Amino acid sequence: MVQQNGTGEQSSDPDYFQTNPKPPNLDRQITLARSFIEQHASENRRVALVTSGGTTVPLENQTVRFIDNFSAGTRGATSAEYFLEAGYAVIFLHRQFSLLPYSRHYSHSTNCFLDFMTHNDVGAVVVESEYQQQMAQVLSHYRKAKDDNTLLLLPFTTVNEYLWLLRGLAMQMQPLGANGLFYLAAAVSDFFVPAERMVEHKIQSSEDFQEELTNGNGARAPAAHMDGKRLIIDLDPVPKFLKLLVDGWAPRSMIVSFKLETDPSLLAKKARYALEKYSHHLVIGNLLNTRKWEVLFVSADGGERWIRVPAGRRSKSVTNWDHDSQPQEPAIEIESWIVPEVAKEHTKMIEKAASKQ
Ligand code: PMT
Image 1 (cartoon, rainbow, N blue to C red):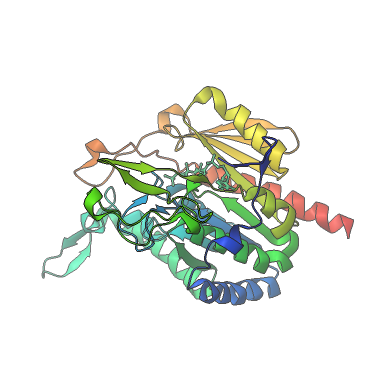
Image 2: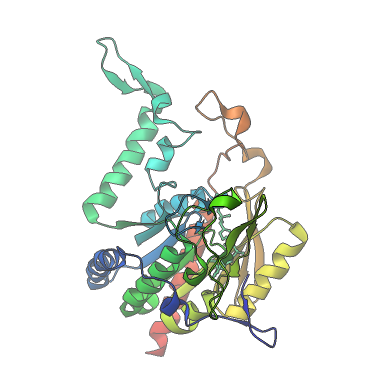
């Protein structure tokens, strides 16, 4: 959802950062990113900013209640590993406590790390023999990323934190020029409560204890309030930041956005629409229910093609005993095909930029 102006045109809101507060730890996160980027720029390494997981929309300043979305961060965390494998340094801008590169193999409900462990003959805790090889591999990739300082983890929770960070990081990445890549896999809220419409305290479910509504003197009505026994939530659109990113914050980098839909008949149309509207390089379309086995690449040169995990390789057994309720995991991670394709396009873009110099 985007902001509409009087003519029905969609616009990005340059006032957003004047009217919504800067997160308290933003400067510290940007400082970390600056030295990370400087190191990799000096080594002429490509840097990918991978965004991952869902943003929240708090309903109260002292937040008890918030709106969230489904994203676990699988796409982002998995892609980050393949970018590292392809030689990129990765800034992993992720929802706090969502899946992380490498540890994702042993976390959350489908891959609880305890399911990989056992006691040996003398009672020590060890990795089950059948998982030794795979875990050794993950561990060595993880250690390499740490030793080479090629993975920077930066967390966000709210959509406001995400937007401030995205802008701040984009500015820091400008000196990378075409070596910078934005891979926007986070599920970003389309609606939010702007600071000026946020109530301070927990919304009371009883009218008798409700905070005074402060919509006098031109101030806008609070976004969430009780009306009798009903909770009324009236959200503002989040301005679309893709346009600002493409035109202003990261004009020389490659920008890849994702398009999520649930209606198959809309996916290609909406992906193409996004590409034409924001004039970036690539939109990767995916459907909620099939996102682990198929994605649609829609690129600026007019190309449109599906990448699909073959039908025979769409499921593998999972390790824990509670997997009946979980969606099946594909035997091939589709990100192992997505990322090399993106990197190939990035190479072309870098070569084109170099030929113009
Ligand atoms: O984490 P998983 O469970 O693995 O799921 C992965 C995923 C489905 C979340 C991922 O593959 C994906 O599709 N991410 C994009 C989801 C999304 O926000 O789609 P959208 O159609 O609402 O937005 C399209 C693009 O506009 C996104 O690149 C987003 O960064 C951008 N956007 C969105 C909102 C906003 N206010 N401003 C934006 O610029």
